[in-house]
Image (cartoon, rainbow, N blue to C red; front, side, top):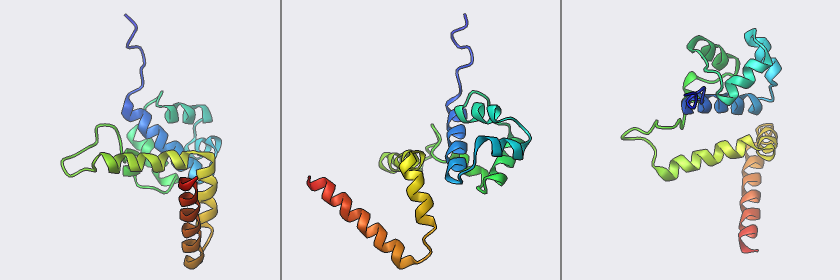
Length: 139
């Protein structure tokens, strides 16, 4: 039987999606990340899809290049819930953030927002978005 043939592990898929999320948040291409690691962009694609498992030393290198702790890649991982872990509402809330930042619009907004250095302008922008969202709820 070959039915169990190479089905990616959910943790490998999650780690890969977090690599992709952070890479795209930084505006880095798969080619650039691959070059930094001395591997091909195809290998990066396989990591990001969870097709290939990322080894410990390679994950350490990726965390250094993407400037995040290794733990970043395991945040909200499937089956990660501990006794004091997040409840369902918190978990779905953080998944919503990941989904948002994985979208084209979310990335564009995030990149533009972090370039705004004045805290008052940032606050006003948040207030504007909240007001627009409230308007959308009324319609």
